Image (cartoon, rainbow, N blue to C red; front, side, top):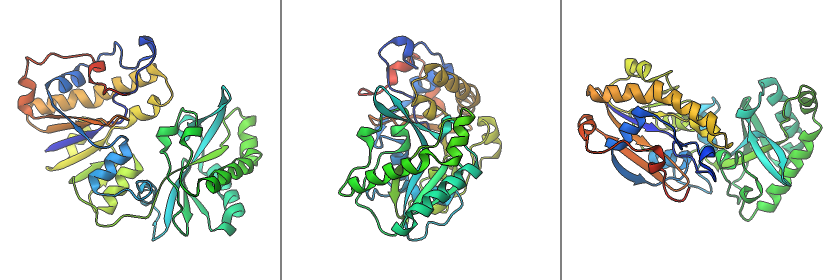
Length: 345
């Protein structure tokens, strides 16, 4: 049984000081042993979304078609429409810049999402735009025709100033104006007024990304996909591959996994890496070490699995491959995790 682990933000960007570098001084013995004994390579893909789409053969349109695939995983049929993700976000002012916080950083319930999306539909419906919110934190925008627009992903923008990451393309000015309209509509919305009274960040904008039409004739690179991420599950669904949510830990997965090639998306590090909190990142890595890396190293020792780790970064995707005999390469010393960070991040 071959286990592919997709682990975005395993190598987060460095920091000015060692204290603020998530990788500096951290110990993860099982992970460090796996990396030290692995055969190393490099794959294309600079974000988790691009890696997943390339693996399944979902070609870039103007963006990679993240929205229609995620929508399918969220229980709605994309049809032949063009879809964009329109995720609810909070924009805060920091040093005269608007900085984005995604919905993982604040509470949001379905009733609030429904009320906000209803207001957007009432305002923009005559322009052929239709918003849906199948889950409180996952919103989508349906268009009757593809726009001349390219976008940046939500996790490329999270924790950052948004100006350099706003939509580009021939229709960029129209869509930037539309985003301004959205912000004005949401500013004094009763939902946001109530949220601010409770001391909760208002949903004062949306982030457009991942536009496309549902791709056809996808590849089937894995026999089963295990992920909480909607894109990964949507790709599996579109490719007619068995899929399910990520199990609690590696022992739980090993008990139910059948022979074959499995993709497991371990994306817990991703959200915390966006916001410059090294302690939160280290806490998540410690959990992955205990629940996944240590038991998978043991399964590798017993010959139960072979293992490949894929670690997308903005500078490409390092890949580490191991078979049972790899662990006997004792002449390869265990190194600090900082040694594996690709140059350029």
